[in-house]
Length: 75
View (cartoon, rainbow, N blue to C red):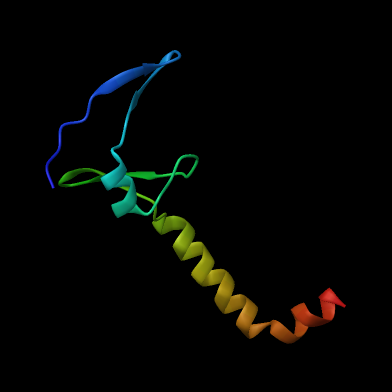
């Protein structure tokens, strides 16, 4: 997809308006957050946060391994 987007003034900042089709492809809506990743090919906008995903993977492993302890703490 190639599309020209216009930069607009938003208060003291500059923003870009994303068309509905692009929001639908990203599966995001007003108020959601997007990650901006700098890649060798340029800039990527994504709702996926690779660092958060890595941290969640580690947390899930700990929770699986320590589920009995966590259950006891929750009581």
